[in-house]
Length: 345
Image 1 (cartoon, rainbow, N blue to C red):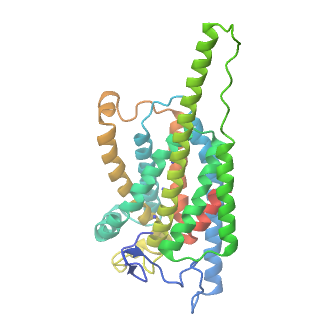
Image 2: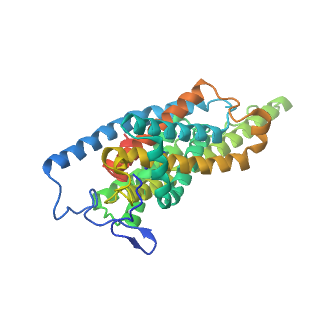
Image 3: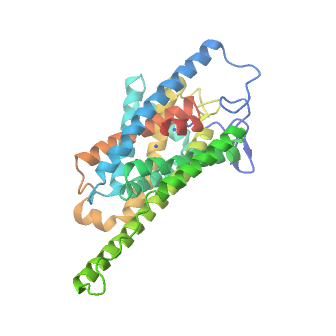
């Protein structure tokens, strides 16, 4: 229902304003001329597999949790749920830094020095916020199995964005697989269409029968409209997911985690991801906070920001926050295509 951001420019620079990576980056199709040692490669592979496994487990539960949270007529604000999710991400990341030898002063200094990267991650932060909001919209109108099938179209969008932004080549088998995926998504949507029941009664049918038929038809029209909104929201989610994952992968995979590594030695290596997550979470909080004030200001003033929050909403927030942290780790240690495959499992 969500980040190593260092401030060093992307290795390989920019090409026409598009974030680019050199061909020798891991997962970029070509092997480096002087690759890392076998032990280092094994370590990276083990980290990637670990986080991919976590992502599979988390994503499996997330859809069901969100569907349960929005079943019926939820009263909580979707913007409040996203605010809570991003706040929890920031808190967990700060606690990680503090528990591994960092300090609040070091975090503040890092954020001030790396403000350019903070500006850059406003783009994926805004996209992820929109994606989280749309997840509530889609799952309140679609069954969890249907949503799970339709959202797999993000495999296609991720592959396309990887090709155009990162210049990753697609094999013929991959293209065929993506086309088959599109067919499966289309069939899943067609299977949800239900015929409108014919009106009962013949020439001597009563007025009450006609009224019932009219109401049934109106209900079917409304149901079709809601289903269309859910499908549209899901397809937008798939598009945003593909773009955000590829863009974030481009920001994450760089040679250095900071413009000034000598000033922030703790923000490198195994701890860099936590610092980067703090940047992303703060960017998200800034954007979703502004959205909530504009869109939900009247409701917040009258009922409060957390009006209608229940246990199901709290569990959904925790699940989404955990998923955002895991996705960031996957994008750092693997790539966006593997991330999407894991969420498709």
